[in-house]
Image 1: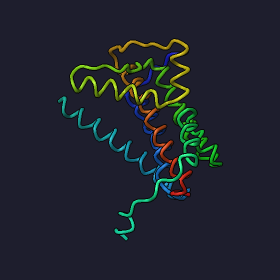
Image 2: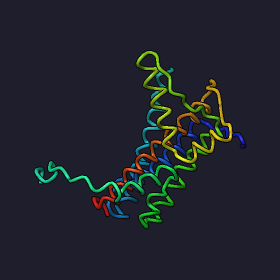
Image 3: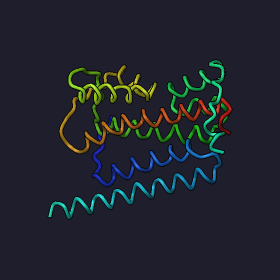
Length: 61
Length: 138
């Protein structure tokens, strides 16, 4: 099995993508709502990723 | 409206949902395939399997149930249940001798979380399969 070396951002991005797809598929009732919810969740993940990243950057001084 | 929500829905017969839930556990997305929701089943299968294999390639550790203080029990037993929920992916990985020790480093840490999360996402897929099989969802 090949070894995978990902940066924090790459790993978080991949995590967000897979999780958003599943959350979108299982949560809503119509395909349109599922797509919207999946995109919304993914955007929230990315927002949190960048937001918390900047908070940690400033927190370290 | 609120009263309708509060009303308990009757539990459907086990035979109507158990095969879909069991197959959903064994093969991620399998329950949806059984219920003829192939598109959604394929998306679930690809997402959960990708996450699990990425976890393996990042050399994440599999949890083993341990007892001790509350936090140790909670983390290790909960993590073990999360790992097992990946179904055949977990069984094959263990059967083929995957036994990665828990190492320091962010890649290993992410790998461990990916493995557990793959199982937890599969639980969501199983719940969805249950709701479809029970007629509570389209």
